[in-house]
Length: 494
Ligand code: BG6
Image 1 (cartoon, rainbow, N blue to C red):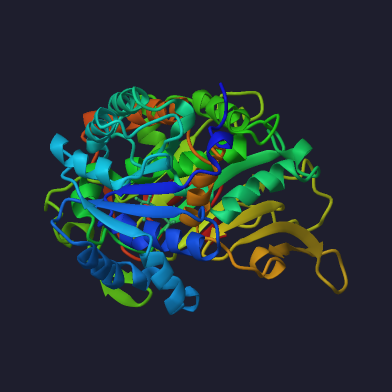
Image 2: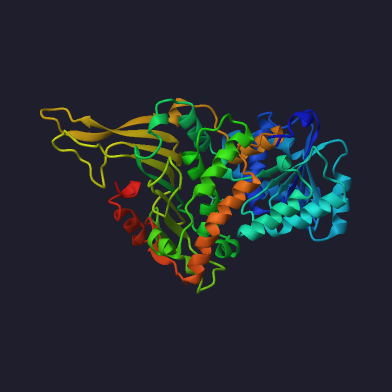
């Protein structure tokens, strides 16, 4: 399998064609990311952006929408008027109702011949098949084209396969960029460097030297205006099946032979395929679903999930998941991986905690080991701050040999003070340059669904209702109990 179609296309002008061009994702993420990429000279000189929407707008109306809805999401200090004007000059608006085959003729007319076309599908995944079929029918796809697919790619394995099949009829796998924006985050990419660019952790990065791994993505936001989508999706499909499993893969994968896309993705795939399937018993013991009730976040009162706009009053959608996963291979046998994500949690925090094994025997008179304060931990914080901390025991000054945990702290924001691109900007530049390493391959995505599906199905079959948790906390008590059973605690409790 070749890894990229980059080399043939670098010199071509670019037509970036965004389906869902007037949608929420475009406003908040894509257009600001493209603006930053453009103002730092990271788009080809001859680039045009064709925003596709179903509203009957003129170009000026679309630009007006951008001013109002997208500009506020651009960092103030980056937003100089001439740069914004130069950016706006790249745009055209094309009205296409994606279900209407005839509308694509307008797009065919608007896109230039002899260009590289990148199609960004920021629409609901149910539309991907129709869009790709129509693009092909209007001869808009050629061997230089690329397509970017937004998550969630399907709602289960079957629907993901169907999408992959229909997109795959028109695009080779090397032309398909399945985006998971967590793979574009600086610290997530840094995790690969931490593991594979430094020799010291290599020998320790396995059972029995590692006691457990925690992966937490906690958000303070609620469901916001996305209830229609979220209520059908829930935290398991929205976050665990993709972002958390991708983080787990990077923690758990074997060293790839290189950073080539397939070398990395082959190793991630092996991890996903090694995840132990969950039985009905495992589900009740090792998973916790939660749903937030009213409370306070950052001192502000907030509604419960069931009171949010457009949420059905009897909704069973989970806004929180905690689970204990296992990887059935030699490296990770018997090491629990605790994954946790939730909305309306106590604070915004994404981190990975590698808890190393206890001392085999302690000669220190007052070793603080116990669930709350065990020796060595590597804490990789992805957000809000970017840092890597190694917790060690040190002797407390004074007489005697009393030990206390202290941190070796690598503050990445201080170590590298230059500008940091947002995940979407970094990934969009990768697409333009034909770099697939930080995108998911078809088999990876399907393996992730193959593991997640039985969990979601099992909950449904058991009539499992999410447990309530007060907004502003770290989830239901059962999540703490999941750890306590193994004499462990989540990192914020230690
Ligand atoms: C998205 C989810 O993929 O990731 C959202 O659909 C979630 O529900 C978001 O809020 C979190 O991303 P980040 O970058 O803010 O951690």
